[in-house]
Length: 71
Image (cartoon, rainbow, N blue to C red; front, side, top):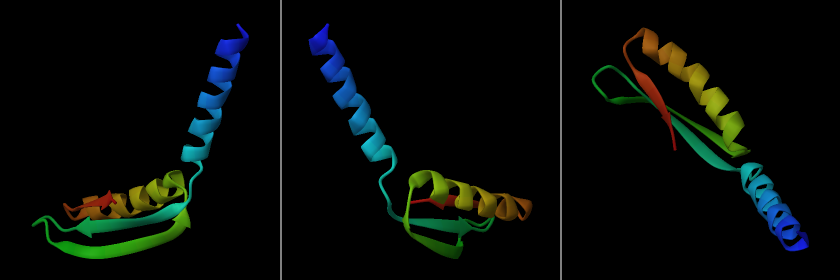
């Protein structure tokens, strides 16, 4: 049992470490002709924060038939 507890604990710590890792992300928005119209860079943020910000931009782009993607 002790062997499994240690393995599970290490797996949990690894998941937490990667989930909270801060990186640079770029959200690129395209118009309905798939031409890039806007590029936003988010420096040293977690992926969740970058996704939230890009999703907000995506709502605005979708009104005009476009979309945004996070890289």
